[in-house]
Length: 149
Image (tube, rainbow, N blue to C red; front, side):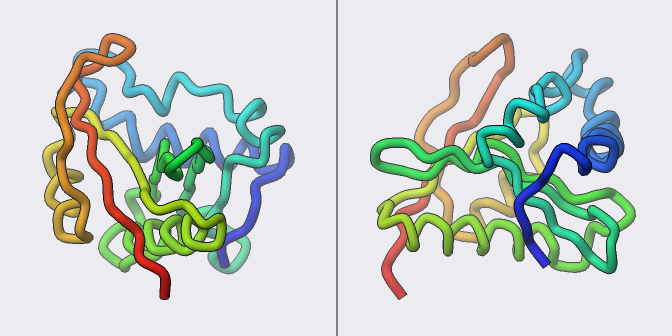
């Protein structure tokens, strides 16, 4: 089940973010951007959705509505739950949200050092638009046009 996060979910969110992103610290030589976010503030803005499987938070989405697109600011799956299709399920949920909001595009970005993410996003129909240093990180920006179903 994918649901909106509440402040009661903060410990589970912190644990998920730590587990999902700490392996990248060595590769990036810094904490990845998602480890630096204020999730309490994002929850207050109703921008965090969780994949809850039998009462356990196994995945997370941070979605930010922009003027002409939905920004998929963060998608994370707990390492113990990876390989079960949860990442794809979360991304498909984000695309459904964009359609429901009448937004024609989803935008996202990932760290250049997270090469495995690039392959997943490309397989799901996202195309690279550019690369840039953003907030001190080497990022790859991607987008996908969302059709109405």
